[in-house]
Length: 415
Image (tube, rainbow, N blue to C red; front, side, top):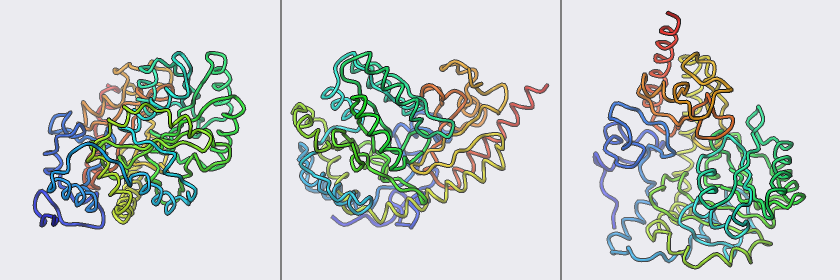
């Protein structure tokens, strides 16, 4: 099926995917990012990107629709496509498609792996602040969550992690550690040496590691992703990943759970019914993205790098008291708003106290939707997460509004 000619709904290809859609086009979207808030709000919160589909993905889906190919998922080729991508991008040359399982999405895949390697009541360690579903999904599966807070540099604090591992061993028979690689919300890309230290600690304390690597294709210039299963000591670990974030495919569900060589037998025991969750069109889209979407991804990474630099400049101009930790990967910026004044959370404020939440300030006074740091666990109060995977114009408008709102709030508080 031929690709549609450029129109208002199908813009012509451009080097930077982030500049292809207008604000009017984006407001016609019905997904959660653009559907949750009123039309005057600029949504820079949930991890969706303001981009059209990569041409390779659009073509694959159009061919499937034209054929009426909308039956049950048959994931032949998905794992192989990931292996080719991983070898090219990360040098992961010993990846084995035979040690994979197709799961509905990354978080549901993580839950299924937790069911394989932990028991109800066991402890799952996370490095806070971290992606909120780490808490919700683990607790819903009947596991306890223990935090090992990140260091002041927002990197893994190995001493805190070891203490959390030690405590986890006293609370249950089979603890696990959910690693976020790269880390959401901080944008930190873990170094190989850090991951090797994690593996050594996990082995010493009998903790199983499950690495969420959904953002792995989004290492920005200056950083290199290390897949956890490639580090020394990770042979009994798992990774769960998909192209969902890198190619904006959250609504086309299909992910891969990957076992290290010593964990393959456990992955093979995953219940057969789990494989009924992935969407056939999701498999089609994910496979096409990994196999044929590399050039589009490179253009995207260039655009994200430019936006990362633009954001730094905008914050310095409009919000100079906001702390900006330059992300190494993802398209998420973790902003420290604790110095904004009485309308922002103080370091010791209680999670959930929206009266002190800077995200609430920016939504109400700037009409910019951000993710509240309170949801990310200990260490998140007073922070916000900003999604900069949007057009330079929208990003500029949003930060300008935020700066004006902060000034107005400060002036009102001074009266």
